Amino acid sequence: MELVSFLLSNQIRERAERVFSEHQERILRLLPKADVQHVGSTAIPNSLTKGDVDLQVRVPESMFAEAIEKLSTLYKVNEGSVRTDSFCAFYDETADLPLGVQLTAIGSELDLFWKFRDVLLADDRYRVEYDELKKQYEGKNMEEYRQAKQRFFGRLMKTPEFQRL
Image (tube, rainbow, N blue to C red; front, side):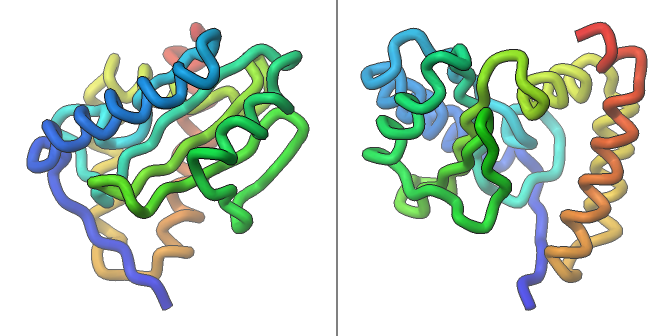
């Protein structure tokens, strides 16, 4: 059973920014029209994080298949993740910090990660609530944490701040 643990994002901020910049550059060399964004808790100052870096790569729907092909030359496809006609997850365990790459077609149903980040940055109450949830799962089952996290983001999607994006 995998257990979850957290640290303050500020402790790894410089490393996370370096990983983001490095991989953003790599991705843009292959997909110059992509929108590559730093998402996840390392993109949010003062938040708790598992210590990994998450990127969202947003491409027009017409480029989605090509983007999968090209990103597959850089990263492993995350076979344990959801995969649809407009979403595919990748990972890289060899980066300075563990890296997750979420490829989405712009405007698709899972083109959400940047919105979550923006809401958490815009209203500190949501960041604090999310961190409190994380504290409840410190040292506990990762799958249970992921389910609680999914419920939290489901509620976040109903907020006026999210709806405006």
